[in-house]
Amino acid sequence: MKKLFIILFTILIAAACSKSDSRYVNPNLPSNSINYTVYLNNPDAINLLNPGGVYVAYGVGGSISGIGIYNAGTQYFAYELTCPNHKPLECSVLTRKENKGVFVYCKCLHNHDGQEAQFSLINGQSLTPGIQYQLKPYHVRKQGDYLYITY
Image (tube, rainbow, N blue to C red):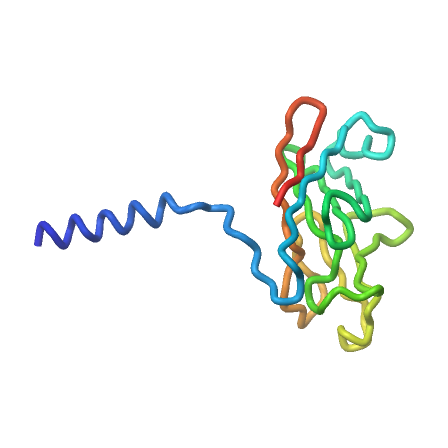
């Protein structure tokens, strides 16, 4: 009985100590290595200094299409700007309407029952019914006036 308890306890500890930032698994998107740095005082990224601020950059850091970043106040979230629900196409680059707001949209209407798939940069979730995959998240580390985005 004591051996069983030790074995179960060891398994529980190992599970609790496992790496919590597991890799995002999606058969539609390649697992590119990402390495991108954002200087927060750059005029293009100045919105990230305020909670609720958004910054998008296309064709950067090894991303598939680009990177969208959201300032949640106490932390930052970054996501791939390629629709995660089909293989990358020209129309699958996610864009904001009028370059405003926290939502990004996929223009591949034929892949989403005739509608634009809508995703939130706040949490990566889709607001469109029937969407299987959320946005591909990237790790964000803030150091001084810089954000380091990696995957």
